[in-house]
Image 1 (cartoon, rainbow, N blue to C red):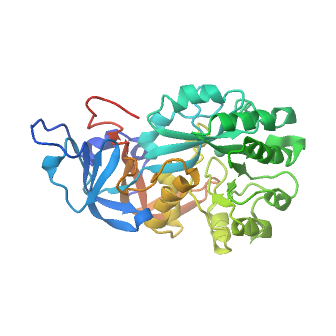
Image 2 (cartoon, rainbow, N blue to C red):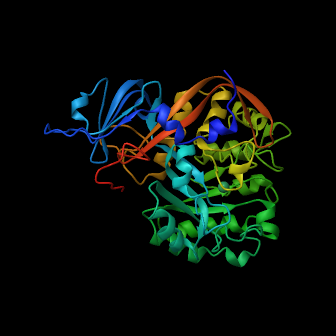
Image 3 (cartoon, rainbow, N blue to C red):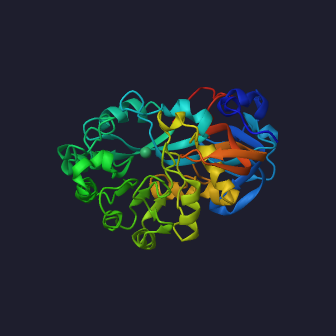
Length: 417
Ligand SMILES: [Zn+2]
């Protein structure tokens, strides 16, 4: 099969017309048991080791049934997902979605047609000084589900191209702790970017302050620490991370990273052993096929796959839109189940704020992603533009958040979260 063109990739919602046939409300007096039924797709839900053709029924915004067949007369609306994959709504643990208020945020609802993502985690787009704006302008107004890490720098990512912690006075543990504590419903902890270009002379002081902030906050929050061209000894840096903290960009080929001279640094493997979460964070410069392979072979496996999508990374040839990033792990030999688990149940468990998020279990939020697995040789690029040939790739078709499709069939009356 031919390789996808950029147009194929960006076709987004127009793919819907040919891809997932939809039908509107059936007006009848019969009792309607389901607001929406997604019919005939191949359901993959790693949380319950489920893979098979199923109908998924959603009622009142929650998964109400996953059955081999649901009587069509019980559905107010249906989506025909035959020939498609149906997964729990994808959860992307590392994204940049503070459009209008930071340097490289993409509006999450514009992204969804390419990302097939229903839950985005903002990786430190906002800091203490602008978090309330992020909350009002993005979190409240997005149809997507949004969580966030608060940047240890009070300016968040507004300083670009100047590193947000190059002036250490911006790294304010007290203000960050307050912001974390005040926004516990959506905040997972503090974000810090530990690259020499971002921290300048300040070494690991921003990381130390991020840890201090989550501890001061009293929330048991996590620190998400970005690595890649680290200041000083990377092992000293990584040794600071606590169980449950998140290390992002482990497979970067920027200098001073996890793999040096072909070997994973022992501190990285020790971190993984003590419960530090390894998050891919593809981004514009942080995913290299050879490094990923070497690291994984030596035990530095990932817990979560994430895109690190932004207005910067989204314009690179490596195109880190979420299904495309997942496809790169298929090309590395991971199974569809492994890849979907790393983009659903695993990040949802780390978020830990919504029962059954990342699953299609009865009672879970009615968040669903419909994807197409397009078979045939496909060329994928890493962030250094090295090619790999995969056997198939994933393409976004449609998402549903709490039972409401991101497009037709429209909810009547139209309500979202
Ligand atoms: Zn990032």
